[in-house]
Image (cartoon, rainbow, N blue to C red; front, top):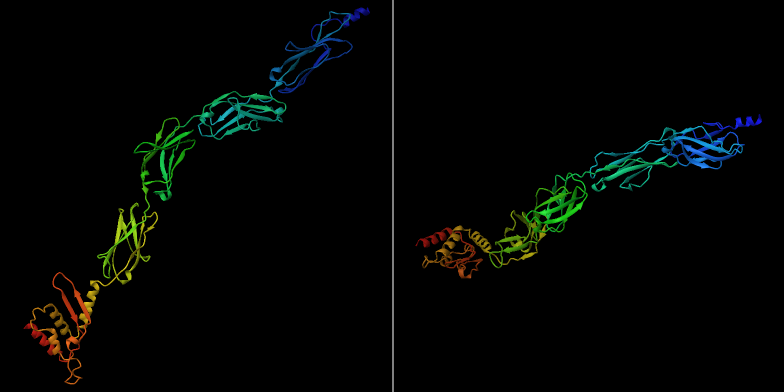
Length: 503
């Protein structure tokens, strides 16, 4: 009877046994550790073999009762688990193993696979692009920390891993085209996921609206100074090759390649031969585009002028009219010339078409001294060297003044002065009559106050006040002027002279 009871207690049982229990965590997320424990209710029987199963497949077996662990759970670890124990029965060596009830373990997603987005959707060369790695933590694990990294063709971009899900690229170029993706991971536990790859093609914009302009001080290109030629485009991306050309020959005078919408070409120390018509070209791989033609005029500063003085005779005298001529050998017109005497302005004259200019000057005694001139075409005045001018003697102008003074002295009385001038011009027709004889007959002015015996002064005893020499093509005429004092009966004397003239 006792033996029968033991056989009933330890009889083999098919199906699940309540003697074994599989202990498993209630909630599992990606990255969590899973510990499975196979427990028995009674420990008085020995264990020959312990096995753990997932979805009917054996995962691990051991000769002793031990745990089974999954260090970092993944979604694929989800499934149905159970354990089985084969006890040692001395009386029943063929007893089957005992199996626990199955436990369903569902590994939950900590965060979904990230999605890479590109903004703007069509990347244009030279423009900024923002890459975003989009994902979100499970609400039950919202305290976990995520970090992100972006890749292009297997190389990390930016500074590598960052807590920001965005990466801003300041400017995308054609060389940046390629395969992009992003990765997201948690710090603890470490779960990393990668987005799908996205092909980004950076579109290049052809150049357009090419223009050429010059930059010079006050808008003038001056010989000897630097000239800047600016070639620019309104549109165009990537590396742009700019070249500058002279229209007359078509040859290139400069070439530059860079990522810019405008480039400068500096021409140092511009010369007169650099004047002409220019244009520029721009090309970023879609064919060169040419600008309009720009005419460049090189202005030449006035050179140091040369002053010359032209007089009517070798030695200038008072009353002469001299010509002051000032001329700069080089200089862009118009040129304004200023004339100076001892640094005092005399006047100015303009040369609208270039060349020199003159100033006429009637000389007086004050005009002796140093003369200079100045040339100015708005690019800086230049002063000539000093030219001296000295005066000597008198001119016919002075002689005429002397004659006028003599006639003035003879105006009292006027008849005597007229008679003397008449005699000087027509002395050949007078015959035997002469002015000296007439004058000898004229009593002195002091005859009234003198005694009758007092003789009148002879004409030979009088000294002339002025002598006038008038050279000409004909005969030489001499004018002698004496100062005499006539008596009160000058009317009789004047009548006598007129009678002699008539005869």
